[in-house]
Image (cartoon, rainbow over all chains, first blue to last red; front, side, top):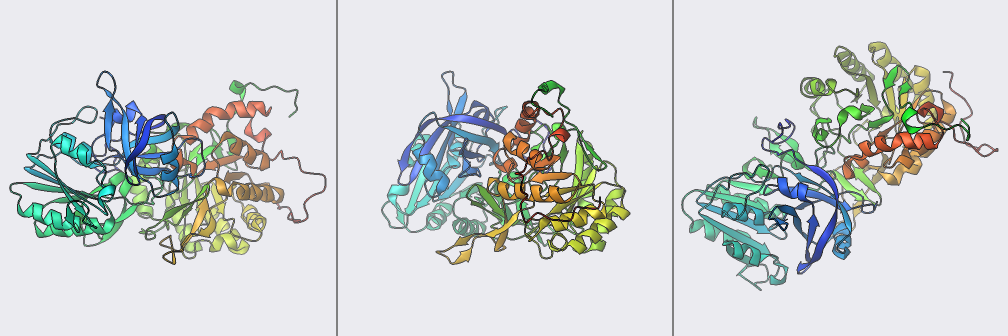
Length: 292
Length: 327
C-alpha cells in the first residue's frame, strides 16, 4: 500500500489508474438498466467494495465529462485473477444512452478505482438499503461479508458478518435489477415497489423498520439511493440507534478531487459545517455527520 | 524559421521565459482544475510540468457556492464553484510545504476583494520560499466583485502596479473574456509592468431546467470552459498579441497538441491546461510527450520561434486595437 494522501479520507486507497479499455459485453439487465463488462485488470485488482470509477467514451468530446459509476463486481480471468469490472447503469442521460448503444470492442476511458468505499467490519447483522439504482455497490459488499470473495491488493480481510439483508426498493418489479445475484450469495432480500408489483407495496424504509425490529446483536446499515431516501433511512437508523453509512451520488466532474464540484455539507465537529468533496473524502460517509 | 531548416525533436529547447519567470517547459496546469496538485501525485509526474497553479486562494476561508456547482454543456462544462478554499494562512500551512518541494514552478493564484487585500496577500506570500510566481485572479465570474478588476482597465492597472511594488515575485494577470475589448485590459496590465498575461478565464453562461423552471447551477450563473470555448480563447490571445509585447499564457479548451500549437502561433508563449484535466487526468503528460515532435515539425527550435508567427491576410481586420502598448 502506498503512503496515504492527507487530502483524502483516512482509508482512501490511492491506487487509481487511468486506462483506455475495451467493452467485453454490454446488455440489458432490467427495464432501463444495463450491465457493461470492461476489461481492466489493473482496476479490478485493487478495487475494494463501495469504490467507483469514472467513465467516458474514448475519443469523443460530447459527452465531454466522465460519469461516476459504482462498480457492480469484478470478474475473473482463466486463472481466477481479476480481469475486469462489471458496471450496472440506468439509462437516463446523454452518456448512458450512448453507452447502452456501445458494442463489444468499443473503447472507454476509465479511471479508478476511486473513493473510500465501505470499510470491512464484522457485525452480527449487516443491513444493506438500496433505492433505485443504489443496489449496485452492494454486490461486492455482500461477497466480502459472506466470505465468498476478497478484494484489494493486498487482499483485505473478509470481516465476516453473521447475516446480510438487502432492503431494496424500486418503482416497479421490472426495474429491480440483480435480485438473483444477491440471493445466490445467500443474502436475505426484502423487496419494496411503489406500485406493489413485487414485494412490499410502499417505501423501502417501511421494510427497513421491520427488518430492524426483528434484528439482534451488533448491526450496521449501509445505504445508497436517491438523496431523500437516504435521508429517510438515516432517520430510521437513528431511531433504532444503529450506525448508518451512506454512499452519496453527488454530481461529479473529475472524480479525483481537483474540481470541487461534488461537495456535501458535513459537520466540522465544532458546531459548524463545511463543504467536503464526495469523491476523495467519500462517497461513503457516516450518515450522522451529513447536513441534509 | 524557414522550411529548409530541420530541427530534430531531441534538440528542441522547451524552456520558456515569461518576464522574470523562467519555466522548464510551456505546459502548465490551470488554477481550479488541478486541486492542490497532491490529489494528482499518483496519476501525473508533477515534476515534469512546466508549472502548477493551485486552486485560487482568498485572504479568508470561503465555503464556496451551493451545489449544483457544475453541469455539462456541449463539448464544455459550466461551473460555479465560488472560490471554495480554506484561506491564505491554511494554504501556507497545509499546501505550500508540499508544493514548494516539487521540482516545478509553483504559481500561486490569488483573489482579493480590494486592491489592499491583493497587496496584503502578495506581501504575505513574498515571505514564503518556493513560490515562482503569482497569478492575479481578476476574472472569476462566480463571486461577487470577482471580475471588477478584470473589466475595468484603470482598476486593473492600479492593482498590478500595487502588487508589483509589494512583492518581489513575478506577477501574472489573468483576464476574463467577458468584456467588450479585452486588449484594453491587457494594455493596462502590460503598462503596469505585469510579467505575463494569462487568458482566458471562463465565459459566463447558464443552464436551465425548463421542467422545473429553475436554473441548474446553485449560483444561477456559471463559467463555461472546455473545448467549446477554444475559438474564443484563440481570438482573445490573437487580439491581445496585436496590442502588447508582454508574454501571454493561453488558456481555454486546450486538450490536444494541435490546440497547444495553435495557441503558440496565435501569440502565446506558454499554455495552461484546464478542464481537460477533469476528463483526461494524464493529458498534461501526453502533451509533454508530443510537444518536441510538434515543434520539430514546425521547424521551431524553441517555443519562442513559433510564438506569434500567425500570418494574417494583407488587409488587417478593422477592429484590431490601434494603440500598441508602451512596453
